[in-house]
Length: 161
Image 1: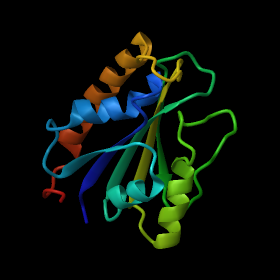
Image 2: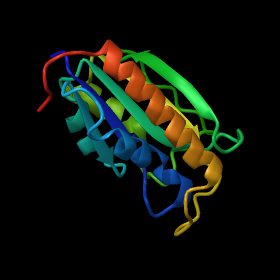
Image 3: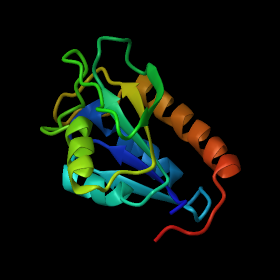
């Protein structure tokens, strides 16, 4: 197709787990019409639907690898024909099924984007009811600004529906 989509994953109910959602919210309405912005609370089927047919899908999520909170894990570009690595030390917030499961589902259904970029923001507090911590909120703002700049200059195209 030629369109792009930014997908923010997370849960507003678990502190720093909302990082991906907040990136999506900051980007909504600020990108070219060729870039869709989607919030996803961890539903693999909805994730597959969101990126289906896209030339580029950028997925942003909170991670927990032991790095300092607010650490931005540089985007990883993955050819969609390769399996997404899953490391026991990295878990995605409170999602019972993760991004790797969605990639495998998309592969099985033949509904993957042409290019998949995964970006993580290290969370520090995933406690139910906790607010997002200041280092993570700062990282969310930096990532949103960076994605806005990159997508505004690099991905012109027709509107995505």
